[in-house]
Amino acid sequence: MLTEPCDADTVSARKGSPVLRIGLVPQDNAVKMVKKWQPLADYLSGELDRDVELEIKPDYRSVITGLANGKIDLGLLGSFAYVRAAEGKKIVPLVRRVIFGSANYHGVVVVHAGSTIHSFAELRGKRFAFTDRNSTTGYALPVRYMHQKGLGTPHHFFSEVIFTGNHDSALLAVYAGTADGAALSTTRLDPQNLKLESLRIIWKSETIPLGPFVARKDLGDAMIGQLRQAFLRLGSTPSAKPLLKQFGVDGFVPARDRDYRGVRNLVKSLEGMIPEE
Image 1: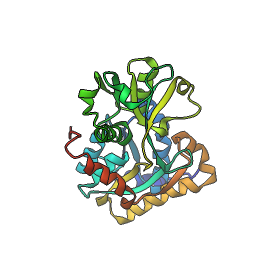
Image 2: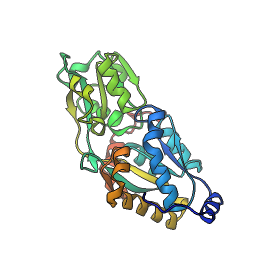
Image 3: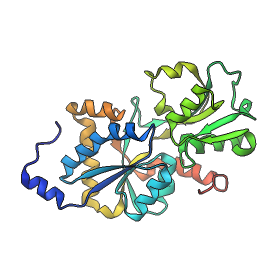
Image 4: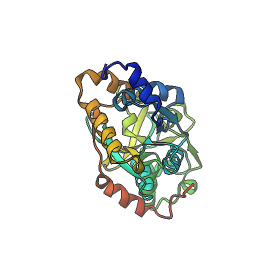
């Protein structure tokens, strides 16, 4: 256990505090997401002496909207989604996850291992799976590459464009043959996933920082500081290793807005190419 058992007075005080809501976008199905992240909500609840609840949202746009209107207090955003959300200056980055030993990652495009496709250009006229229009690796990076190489827009280049909603579904679309290629994050390339043996990477992006957990700025400096320290303690406490494994992370490091300067340049380079909806 990472926190001490609650006595009646603690429970009473907790019930008198507003519920803290964490907005998440499914990386797989919603049931698995709750099972994966509920221990984090329980941990933060104990650390902060207040109830913490998960809210699974269909896409990053919904999480960003919830943060903006105060319906969500914390959120896990991709790098691209964070930069877009930060334009309103209503959120503060807390921490970045460390996955496979790094707080950075890449975007990749994968095809089936038996495919005759060996380059991005050979995907012309094929069925392609993106994840979310606000995803860094699942949309923004491959779209920028297409623009740089003069391949045109996705809807003109591919015969069919699918938005799967999450990275695991994009991976499964290629595995099942419903898409010829897919854009996703290297954070989803778990070496223990046997399905990866049936896939092949044909394109890889530059290194970018993992998206942060963020908090609404109007939670106040004291609460934001408590939240950041709670995440960092979790990442440095030996007894927390089973929890970290549940989340699929190795730990957490502090996140700062300046970490995303390169991603902000990416957003600027894509102005006019990526629709707002």
